[in-house]
Length: 434
Ligand SMILES: [Zn+2]
Ligand SMILES: [Zn+2]
Image 1: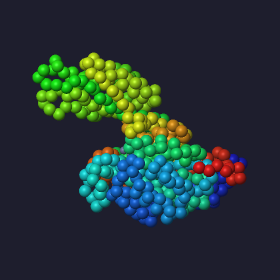
Image 2: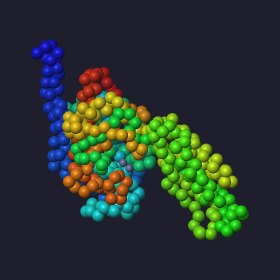
Image 3: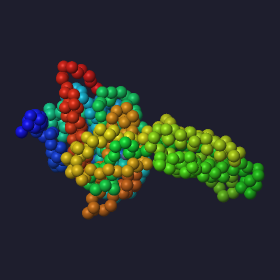
Image 4: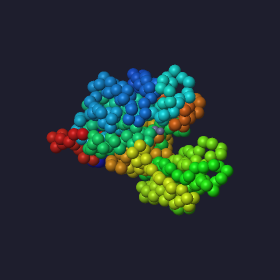
């Protein structure tokens, strides 16, 4: 055995001796599948599912999270961004690595009939954020039991308002993540088998914005249009012209979308209304393309409305629905993810995926810190097909909770180890705190 092999053996034995559980990623899955952890996560998930709360209103969800953290003896900061909770496990010293879950539900009626159906009419956890919270608490429980073996601090981010409210941005604005070296997130996915994950380096989800425009004409009798200015016809032309932005002005190799999903105006068969309101969303994978779309949407709406003798005002709803930047995965973290998920699930269970036009407010973290998000499969071929997120028939395969908790815990723990190997931490030198 040559010198370097001895050195490698020494390093291996050193970590193996010091971290009997944490040096082996596969153990995380066993820990997360243990009924003591799994059943507990299922209970939490069902409780949250029964009581869904919309963005920035997650008060009871947040209270439930804090009660569990208290029981586990994990310190946290609250409130962060109104309902958010940021907790800390480990040495409470650098390096700091964050893992994140979103907490909010959607304003829609659950159509799934089951024992733990939403008890709040018109609100539903249809995007799996109830499962995300349970998984992050599951990771907290596992990590807390082995806290002494952590080589730094894991920061647990329970974030409000992912569904359009920009909760991630508010968490950043609160200044509680200042010293983190990386942040990891996940999203449950219905089209991917349970036990598999999918992601990619670079852009993975599009940047997303919303617009709303009021097109004002002059109302009157439908039979004598010469005395009116018809905003319905103007709005119709506006919508057709908006479709030409992507088809005629954008690079076909640079994916973009403009969709008008709202058209409100008029209420009678024989009346030309005074005004029409339209609204929609636009998506792109780079900030430049996104800003170009935004500028052109405003020009096309006002210009085309003027052609029809109407006035138009355009709003991008910056306050209520702040635009989400493109979600861009860090390349080095992609390598780390492949290694960790590969050893936990098997290399053939870690898939590459194409970018999606959907958006994620995880992107806000990635604008500031190296960040990485992946999709976590939950489809079970032998059971029924699962509906996609935001469907009123959306269901969670609860077996996914163990995989999410294990991956969260494993990614954070092993990244702390990696950071220590690259730059060993000497306790006295650091006094940084989050
Ligand atoms: Zn969603
Ligand atoms: Zn979601």
